[in-house]
Image 1 (cartoon, rainbow, N blue to C red):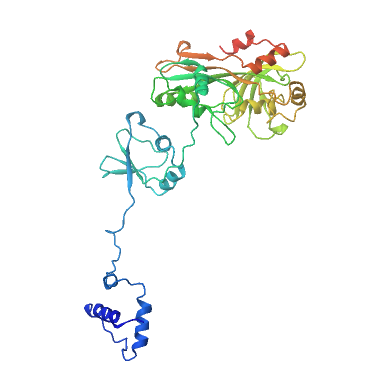
Image 2 (image 1 turned 90 degrees about the vertical axis):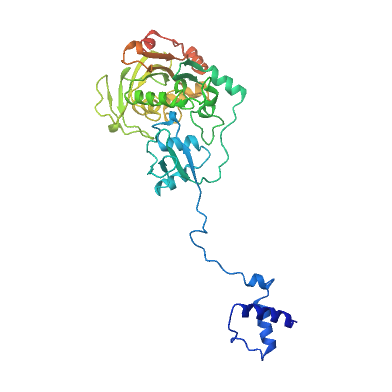
Length: 404
């Protein structure tokens, strides 16, 4: 039973706030006490009841914090999206995409009084500050641990090294970048190639996981920009050695054509012998047969003029109708590939080797013959074994002349 003490405390509270009590009739004391008991059943004390309510305003709302990062001198001119990926590799890039749309990524001085809104393709400036909204919790790092065996393997693959570039002999089965089924990839091993530098080298082009041979890496950001310019101007010459499942016709020529995932119709295929490229949007490959087996197989040297995805594999299978040995992605339906598959087994590996790469040394003012460096890689074991079985010359003079 609620006593008169609670009623007295409540009355004192109401009277102290000059509240009218005309709504209550104490002539009917039991019902009034019942109402008070139900209404204030959660109240612990009159002081708790009398606590005033504060309406939130701008001064009481906590604004989201922002972070500022200074742009280092060696990051001058870098695109914002690449800088964000480098500085915040554990943050989902969708976070930056969202704030990019709302214009919340800013650049300015340390006080951030005069700021500039940035887009993801904006160029950032050295000694400026990048202001970002507070970052979300970091996702667990997916970087793979480099074992001593992997470190030794990738360091022993170095064919050439100077202050600006590295050239490695990429082994079979090592993809350039990781995928859902990749246990390890070249990108995750780059930190083992830092040597005397603080930062790992940078990728400037890619090779398929099944393709072996020379691969060019930039040791600094400046070198990466310079090599990208050389690729764009087509100053870098790449030579591939491959074994086709049958002899091409003609045995020397220039292939131009659109790259498709499926076999192209006959009227969409076009082959021209040694001449000017009519349409630059077409992928272009030059090729020459340097040896062939009396049984089956053709040793062909290829020069990709453009850089399309799986360009050499598609041109061989779709236009030359002579897929590369071991290419069951684009040439699995051909009779020749099935015949070789029955001869060499189901686990026959792709016979595509990046034999050499020629690039211009940085710091040379003129594009002369002496300013270019050419690096070569020998055939891998699985291709050497096939060459011996078919009686092919592993280094014919004609193939070497094609590299000059």
